[in-house]
Length: 198
Image (cartoon, rainbow, N blue to C red; front, side, top):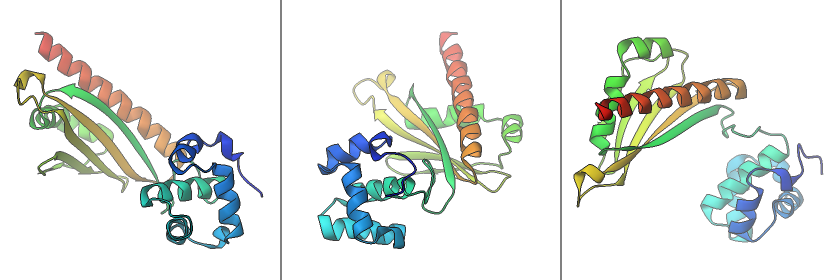
């Protein structure tokens, strides 16, 4: 069994064991014995569901961890081979208010500095989206959902703003963008606090 790290050291080892009642080391052994190294991502996940009755969500998690342990992908890499960076903050305000504040914060100058094209805004019942193409060909989605609606007290509404930056080519690019988005979110939160304190 040639692995990139001991299964017990994998960051998802404990959650996988808690959810499936099977250690990650045992999953590696079972999948190796079932020919997992010759199967693609979808086939491994389907095998986990069919052979061991693993719930689909956890079948995906076990498959990703297995692929990372056998060296097929590194931590943070999607099954397509690319990487994504994410960051989030929970803020006071409704979904609409938070998105309007984010849109105002993401000025043309700031978008240019980050290499972002003009954004598109879309809504669903549960989400507000602020999306922009990135000049390097990657994709940015800012997703806002209500944590508390404030139906009893509108001033108590809180929403979570999450950034998902997908299509990054390397782990280094993921780390660099993750740092950039955390810094950007910190600046946004600081600006909103300053406005509220006036």
